[in-house]
Amino acid sequence: MTETTTAVSAEQQAAEEALTAKVLASFANTTDPRLKQLMQSLTKHLHAFIREVRLTEAEWGKAIEFLTQVGHITDERRQEFILLSDVLGASMQTITVNNPVAGNATEATVFGPFFLETAPEIPIGGDLAGGATGQPAWVEGTVCDLEGNPVPNARIEVWEADEDGFYDVQYDDDRVAGRAHLYSDENGHYAFWGLTPTPYPIPHDGPVGAMLEATGRSPVRAAHLHFMVTAPAMRTLVTHIFVEGDPQLEIGDSVFGVKDSLIKRFETQSAGTPTPDGRDLSGTDWARARFDIVLAPQN
Ligand code: BEZ
Ligand code: FE
Image (cartoon, rainbow, N blue to C red):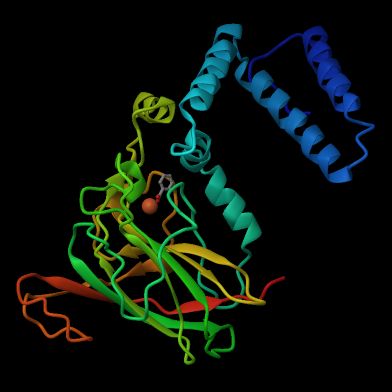
């Protein structure tokens, strides 16, 4: 049993421990063993927390009010519970537990709330911007397995915010922009035009934003480009690439998603530099980045 930090009488301690034991016993007949483990462990940790901080009734009431607000603001377009899980590091911890290091497999990071299954398909070398504004970026690489064999026909989903820091779904219209999927070719190669990512805040006009404010934390995420890569017999990879030199990498990412291996150089090319596919970008700077993806086998 966790010791309380505030000294309490032996009698008081016994009463608290007896209650915890009673609640644990209430789950004793759960037939699903995993559910039993989850509920009993949750009980133990929750009771330990309450006892350790000597939680007041007013504080517990506030916590319930907070969770109620999280529920009220959540709908098909806004998922405040995922946001809460993200800023508490619970999403990243679950990802860390479930994606054990496997050789040189590309590391996973947070999914976030802005993926859509319905993103359009583009050919290799296609443009996913769909009118989203920002510096054009040519991103290319290969998809391989742990032995370095190319993975052909891997489905690569890519999504990102525009230069104002908004995903298409955050606008009040039905635009589809800054997202697409494509497939690696027979050599595992892929390439597309996207946008050089820029830092942006996670939605912070709700209860999670208020919690960040109250705790002196920033809602800003390091600049990133989302990927989800799937292929038969391979572990699905949900990840991002981050932008080398982004000052937000030093300041910190509000959802703890950064891993050093995912920081990539976006090399700026001045306007007029010939592009890999002959696209005319004589009027604007552009960038190029390489991201080689290594998939682990499915467990
Ligand atoms: C995102 O990267 O899209 C994101 C991740 C976690 C919370 C909010 C947004
Ligand atoms: Fe994002």
